[in-house]
Length: 230
Image: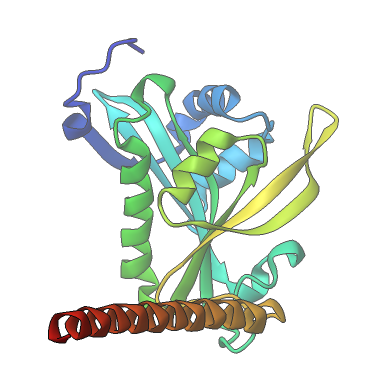
């Protein structure tokens, strides 16, 4: 892949579904992008199993990015993320889990990652309509580049997951990040009333300070008028 990417490269990016013939190439890319080693079965599944939304971004025929996600019922979410949605949502409510999102180094900051993420959102709106209430993913706590990418696109940190990853025999911590869509929201917790009261107190304090300032202005004006009269 060339080291120099034209600023107009995004206009030449094409999107297509991953297929079996892509396996060897995406093995190489995943080895460059991620510290986790995926088994061969994973590559077979994401290129053949229809439950996965596996999309490639290509530039002049070569893969320069990909996103893999699964839309599933909230009842099939792993235990550590079981509280992504409030329990008030029906059991058939769906969520989308991003298994993988990566872009070739030379094409980063050219809008390819955003294009792939937006394509997932469009797929969700078409296939799941408003039944999908959240998009979530896991990320290493040390992967600041990915964290900034998702936070800049309104994903919020939901959970801290100690020792979630095993990378070359070393346990690493992770985060769960969530983007709520179509009216989705997390469970209410004991913190919410305190957050509400904190915001309320801030508003009350602001109103009090404004009224006090207004009182001082009126008083000063009255004193000025009194000086002119006398």
